[in-house]
Length: 469
Image (cartoon, rainbow, N blue to C red):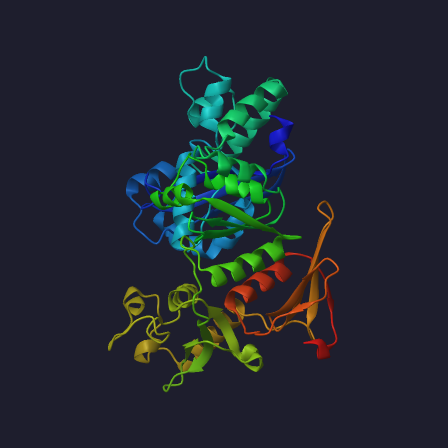
């Protein structure tokens, strides 16, 4: 395998599904193997509850039972972890169009736009081994004596591709593989040489890109660790929805803003989507309203959740918050998951409206709190456990404001962000003076970005005196 490709991260993907159509059928199992510089740096595998019917044929074909899937997390539960492993990486799969279409479909249901360059190992095998008639995964396993313990299980099939790639690296000269990869990864730029030139001039560094049409109307805002690679992925013709194709044909100008790192790119993207309201960004936040979920006690003494649509939140109320969500659908999805996991009553949690018992009680899942058959003390103890173990909102963990610093030594970029109580108060680039924001309100997207960044990274930051907030 060419060293040039290995300089770009790639993620080997395999999915097992309820059927063959990426926009209607669902993923039931996924495995991801992320590779950087010829080393596996991350492996991920999980069953996925498709929240739909799984045919006996699929159960027999994969060996995955419906009972196993009922206890598995949903794609929504795992979307952030899956997206992180796929982020800014070439997607490698056997019949990549299939796996890519399912991932795009699942992310689209979550309001997330996912695009990537794809490398199909079927096409790669055909180019490298033209003497063979078939290039199915089973054929590769038999032909090259590759061990696969559980065929048609996502992780085992993905591991076969990693072993296949390792074989290629040993068997073929680097320059020969490099030329083939160059052809297979080449993107179709739509034939517009002005667009081609703009793409070629984009930096291979973190930041935000903006697509405009001929009337200078913003079409789309995106972010990436590598602006150029991500923009090229939008023009990939391996698999595109009609909407994606419509957008790429309308692009007349590409603008970009470089940032020092990932945090800057995430915050800039969120800000520009709200400011520009691009036509093709699905998750537009035109309103500042969000749904706050807090613990509540019903008149009958049973604990529940209270959902409230608000446009402002007092930082003094942070301690009582269970979570903040963009809409009621997102809030109810989390509550529904908790109800199932802890055998809580959907009726008491406001998920069902009925005068009799909830449906789960009829199935033997709810223990009867809705009809007074479970004592409130016992039910409330289980609710409290669920509340503590699944609390979505993190109280501000510092004594005052902090300044988070991002540096990109390669590009000699420096950027810092002043944050307090999850609110972004200002930022500065390089040696500039701090740019203080005039209006500072709590924003769900900003909270999620900064909270996730602090939780999953080890950022360079320092706590500032409280009088700077």
